[in-house]
Image 1 (tube, rainbow, N blue to C red):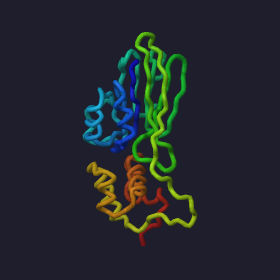
Image 2 (image 1 turned 60 degrees about the vertical axis):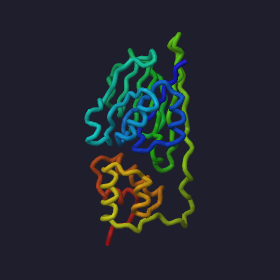
Image 3 (image 1 turned 90 degrees about the horizontal axis):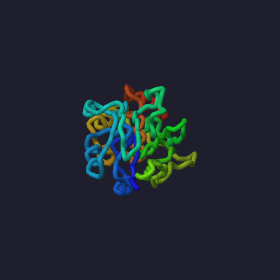
Length: 228
């Protein structure tokens, strides 16, 4: 039995739970938006890695392919970050892997299984943090997909009296986004700018999943008031 770890949209974050799952896998598939070369190298140390470039992957990732067509553990696999860029005919593949939406999806079309493992990077609002593991029978080529729900951090309070953290200016937010571009970790940004981890992850998520957005745009999407 071979095990294939499938993940996407890590956006610079390697969770301990995710790493523990991957240590039991023979191969890793990553469908893009990995965010930093450091994360990619860490995954390569765990198991052989097949990876494609995502829309949020910057200059460092220019050498990564936008799509892959490979035979892995006996399965014919096609992988791309955004499913809109998949070929129209997928009948000769056993598995099509993609990401981008951060939402887990698993559906079969003919002989091909389409799989989006979701995101196991920084949590985006209330969306679950997920990945998948494939168990492949080498003798028959049969496989099954196991969804993995990663333990999440404390949920955002739903108390209407709670007030979002909106005290920092556009100038401060520009500095934060500049550090994101430099590959600074969430924990580094939390310490440097003295803002909560939850707020930092939300800023990073909005910035990395909306190419071209600036500090003003991030503030607007977070519902922050304009600077006076």
